[in-house]
Image (cartoon, rainbow, N blue to C red; front, side):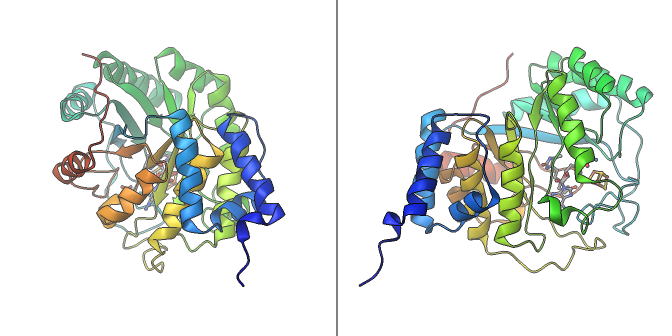
Length: 340
Ligand code: SAM
Ligand code: DTB
Ligand code: SF4
């Protein structure tokens, strides 16, 4: 006789927890063990739970398209082990000056006509200085005037800077926790986890929507992924937007030769992000270029409802736009166009 794992009392407890979450309690707390128990579920069971939560809060056939632009590339003083833009790694990515409003407008309008509704501007900074921030505020207006939602990812912010971005009309600020707290120091030494949490607090305080997620495939265990998801889900409230990145292995970075992760582990992580953060946009982020269609489709079925859309991420290539449009047509999924 085989055991019926579904009747296991702890699983019943976790099921109830997932249900509580589906009823939307944005300040529900998750232990790492509870999150890991979800990651450990048989995949059909996990997918069912994720889909149930997804359907309670979202149209399961809708996908958000967000386009990324690196407005200031390379030369970053931070030593993030995954990042091609760090001065600590020889990746051949040149440092550039910040893009002008006219240059940015052209890309924004191109993204809009290709169907994007959100536009995220990234800068390779540890933290912006106040002069940089004035320039970014102008770029936020460029995005808003085109009728798209505006997001920025600029590194650490002071409370005052977050407030100024809000006043400029910024909708979302992206600042990833990236991994579990106990793994952070082996990936980045130039700042610590608390620095990230502090910036997220200031963003929240300024009234900007929080976009925060992480990277999967950096050699972490399931427990490591559980630690990341628990941290994100326990932010009170949890982020409105959660990018789940698959590590892009860039030659010259310390993570260039990281062993491949089973794609189903990525799918599981997306599903658990959906269950623990029911109302969030869960974004299938970096790594789609290296992912086959079937894995991406599993991610959508697991509750991913946003993608980065456009030829480039920040410095590396993204999935092909024509291939994405074809995939969406084949799936019969729809998107929202930006305001006129
Ligand atoms: N400098 C700012 C910061 O670190 O917050 C903003 C830009 S930074 C490139 C934004 C995020 O990109 C990182 O937090 C990380 O999650 C993601 N990222 C960078 N390199 C990546 C890679 N090779 N693969 C997957 N994600 C990556
Ligand atoms: C996020 O979570 N992923 C994006 C965005 N936020 C800024 C960045 C992905 C970068 C992938 C590697 C590169 O092209 O630099
Ligand atoms: Fe700099 Fe951001 Fe890259 Fe880290 S992830 S090296 S902070 S650009």
